[in-house]
Length: 160
Image (spheres, rainbow, N blue to C red):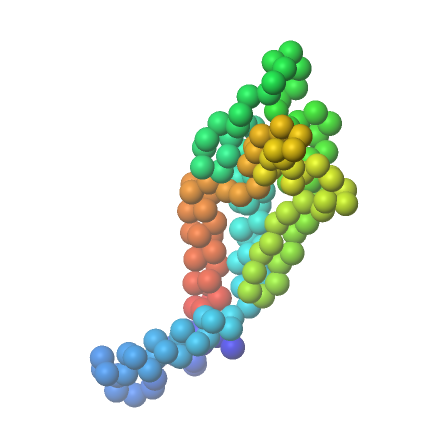
């Protein structure tokens, strides 16, 4: 249960308060933060993660901004890794998309039963001479946005 700073239930102990009380207050808050239900905060981050991953496809680059290796045959007109759109859809919110949110975590991925080649495209496959074109993950910019969103949602959880 989170300690809320709302009318009738102060976060700080009642009565006189001085700096010597702060370690107790902070320890209580730290314990509450370790066991809090962050499900709503993670739900607010999910669209940012989706945008970050789809940006990797749009820019043909890894989450750190490194361009993907070029294709061997430059003739195809479709963007790299987007022939049918099946893998892009699964990386976003389409068929094969995996999103698991619970109280303490968010997991994002692609169901390899739906898009069997997704792992090989992301990590590469030396046996098939297929270079890695890492798309699963988000850039620092999207991590910062997610952290800010998560921080704001956590603040609301504590002080709601």
